[in-house]
Amino acid sequence: MKNKLLLIDNDKIFLNSIGNYLKQEGFFVHSAYNEPSAFRQFQQNKPDLVLLKYDMPAQEGLKILERIRNVDSYTHIILLSDYKLDESSIINCHKAGVSQIVNKPLSKPVLSALVNCLLNPTKETRRIKIGNSCLTLKNQALLTDSIEIKLREREVLVLSALLEKHDCIVDREHLLRLIWNDDDLRNNKALDNIIYQLKIKIKAINNLCIMNYYSKGYLLKIIDKK
Picture (cartoon, helix red, strand yellow):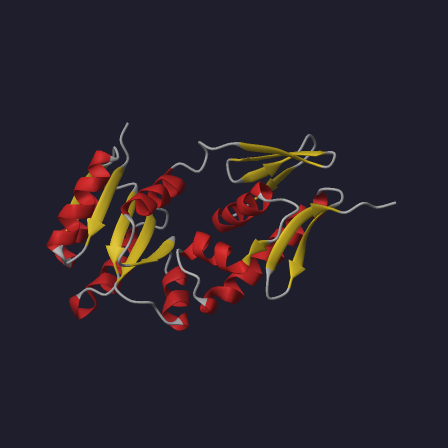
């Protein structure tokens, strides 16, 4: 069954271009260009994910976001912006329930991959052996033979990157782009918090740790305890 998307933007050329591309990628796409039509489409079609332009005229983007969240707390919302948001705006958007913020101009394949990642987090299972530990990342959880550690969406993204390059330093800039599609340093504090939470959670796995390399990045490795 095709996933349903609602694309909301006052730029009709952009709506047609992105909408046609996402249809070719296998999605069922509804489009709206103002607040009344957007909310009507949301209620009628019950999309699985919303792509919403932030900087629409008369702050319609924010009004639409607020109206959607007043009736629905779970549908993923990707916010599209013509410019980089300041730190306060980023924080407020995430508090309002935005899943991701993406700056225009954007790559259509990257946007499609992001949509797929949000809609189908359980389809990808990753297994990797680190030292004597066999780890499985599945269904937003990290599994070993004996324990299951629940993870948040962004924790999964960061841990996946660290697992793929274990015993190698993963640059902070790479992680910032991976999570926010942007290496804006204003997101540093949020990344630090994600790393902090991951460190706490993986303590349950013997000898596995995340090491900080200040001004460089992070490294996932096994610590030998003799």
